[in-house]
Image (cartoon, rainbow, N blue to C red; front, side):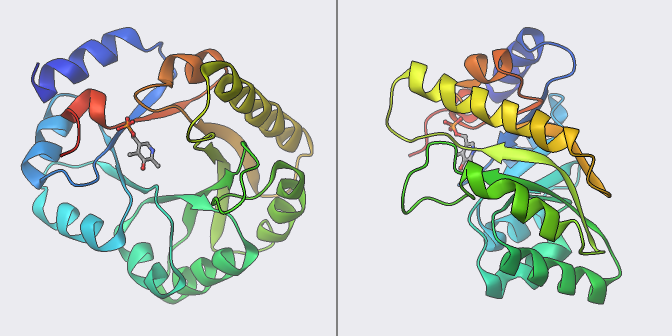
Length: 218
Ligand SMILES: *Cc1c(COP(=O)(O)O)cnc(C)c1O
């Protein structure tokens, strides 16, 4: 099946209210263009450099999300290229984004990345640390928290993954209920090719799909 056919069938399948991002790592600008032309308007990139090249090579309009692990020395460039940063997991990172946004005269919508599998050596803030982090980041004036993002544990069964998605949704609702000034807990980015159905059932508003759109990575 072609990229266009894959997207059309996914768009038919996912319920209204759920958005889909194309996870575009290692894909060419032509492939990304095909995805946008087929009806996707969110592109996720894992690397700042790759995102810069892709964005430069794609003419159709889309919203570009950073979904990878952000290094401090790449924040300035990331702020210039991306419309949303989905993977904020520390105050240090948030402060750097805030500083670079202030210099650039913009405000960055961000998601807080949750380490829902509580894996060591994994990015994302532990669920227990999320409230304190959200409260601190809410005080920064050039960042707007829009919701949460999670990957879920890498190698585990569907039940465990679903439990992680469910806990992240509960955390979203809990944090939203705190009514912290300037914090919107509306977006929940979770679910990939192997897990998007479970993620949608557990409350995802944004799924990030790579292989099912573009084929397996070589
Ligand atoms: C690659 C990637 C995806 C998509 O993964 P697939 O299994 O190819 O759908 C989603 N989110 C992130 C952060 C990724 O790096």
